[in-house]
Amino acid sequence: MYANVTDYGQIAAFGDSKTPEVTIYVPDNYTTIQAAVDNASAGGTIIVRDGTYTENVDVDKRLTIRSENGSDSTIVDAADSMDHVFDVSTDYVNISGFTVKGATFEGYAGIYLNNVEHCNISGNDASENCFGIVLMSSSSNTITNNYASHNDTFIGFGLFEDSSSNIITGNNASYNFGGGIGLANSGNNTLRNNVMSGNGYNFEAEGESYSDFDNDIDTSNLVDGKPIYYLVDASDTVIDSATNAGTVYCVNCDNVTVKDLTLAKNGEGICFYNTSNSSINNNHIENCFDGIALFSFSNNSITGNDAGEGSGGIGLWGSSGNTITDNNVSFSLGANIYLDDSDYNTITNNIANSGNEGIYLRGSDYNTITNNIASKQPRW
Image (tube, rainbow, N blue to C red; front, side, top):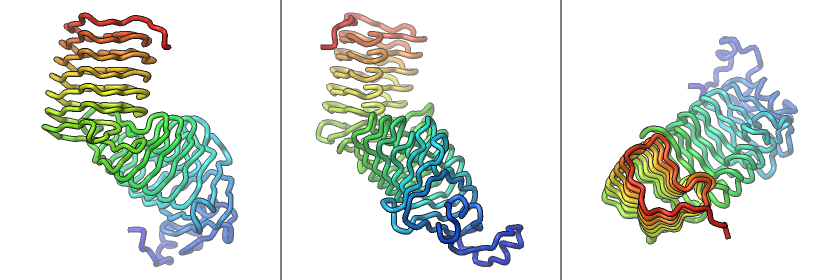
């Protein structure tokens, strides 16, 4: 509706007393990006010439804001580290070609989209912040060809609080202290050709319902050079060493086998949600937040896995009738084997040494626990 408006007299008649301009240049017309935003008319374009601009920019109208020559030449460095560099609070905003940095205080981002739709964020370098690029309750946006590195508290790219129907493609998230790309309670997103490497945890998706997990994420997305396997509504499938999978998610699946993989440095090495009649066998998993995490699942077997060095080893939430047998789960910061609201499971012949807890049950009844070893051992 707004992208092709050219009748500037009509715009003024709707109450905009400023002189309409098709394109505003910074610093030619205004010395700061914020001044250009404040004085631009909705639907206009702001072109920022090469240089470093020390400011935080609030974008509250429909605009295209782009650098003249790309992110290597145009830097926006936060004047206030306790604020987002670009804070977008309206729909149909395009931001491209900037290095955005300096929003280092906890909770702040290089580019922050708050409850908006139909924005396009492309070709930016969102490094050296707390978060790189964040979508909060924001849908139908496109995030493409951006780079996020050395965001030293949390994550490169984050989709939070029902951020749905977004397209996330061609982005690179590397060497962020927390994570590369994370989705929390955010479904129906499409991820393609994203690269995550060297992060604390490269990739993670979490939620509380099927709609939170129902994303379209294919094997073009890589974690430390390995493809993400993210299966939704799949059945009769085997994911083994031939796939070279880097992390595995099975959502609403049946009769899936995950075996013989080496997995490291993701939110979950293997995550099952509402998945039944499946097996997780003989995998080596380390330095993941949870090695194996299973939510609302039943009648599965977890056998012969080696999982450790993370926050949790094997965790079951709201799951019943499963068998956890002959696993070596050790050196977790939390519990090596953890059951929450999970009944009628069998846990036998496992080694669960040197975690904060060996085997921990919370709100879980009628489980059979036999012949396990859970002792405090020296790390080396």
